Length: 385
Image (tube, rainbow, N blue to C red; front, side, top):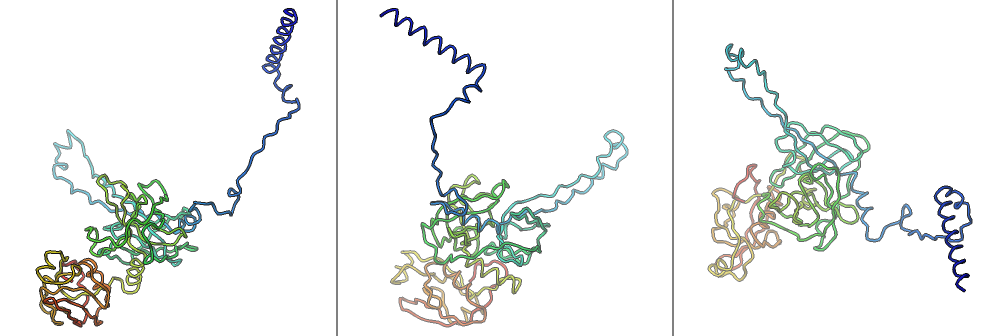
């Protein structure tokens, strides 16, 4: 028995040694051996072209991305005047002639959205502020110089125009029907790295009192918005425009998940006025206001805290002529409720200058309606509305 086991061990050792030698020196001999094992690979059907991927927003991004552009602005830097000492012979003998310093232009980066095949682009006013030159780079690598059609610093919107054939354009979505929790995508060029898409949800609607613009009604989102994204698109899951990305809340300068976009409905209204009139005409009645508080409501014996308290009525303005008084509480404009001073500002601004508006007030705890002829808001920023 021991001899048989020894013989078996020697035979197995010799066979393994021979297999090792063949595998090392002539592996091709082993490749020609018949293979009995078959590996079966299952391919997921979604990888096929044209099939929608579950949980993917690639179709929305593909639809909107061609209409989002990069905006490069430049601002010339004035050269410092040549100091007279440079012309002194003694100075030039020892130090030479330094010549004229060549000032380098400063450059800034932002984004924009093509909203019409005729070449109109929406962006933020602060993106092109004080720019001496504006260049637009399309997603298809074309680059072109843009001209400014008009700006509206109070809403931080601007309209540019480029002349190129076959321009893609975005479709406006229903921003007024957006809901908290809706999935959104932000498209832009953060930090100049190139066109980028980030995803998040609508975190809040109607954000005001942020001190960013005069007129505020922001969509808040946690989709990452960083420097360079300003003027870019906030889109829904169908690829339609919901807003123009404008600002972030951050102590570091980078995204902390709190970004703000101007609703597409507001951007469209401002854009149309800029294209038609060259500027935005807003309503104005000539009053100073502040938010209502519980203490103010109790002191004025008003039944509700909402509304805007009239703190000033400027002489000769529509409010003065209409009979509005200091201490009145404005609670509605043409049937639209006024919740605070911010909403009152937006409602008054939306009125057409020269039209008549019905203002619902509370005076001495009693309701009152006054009709006023709306004036035109002065071009400069003021505290009176």
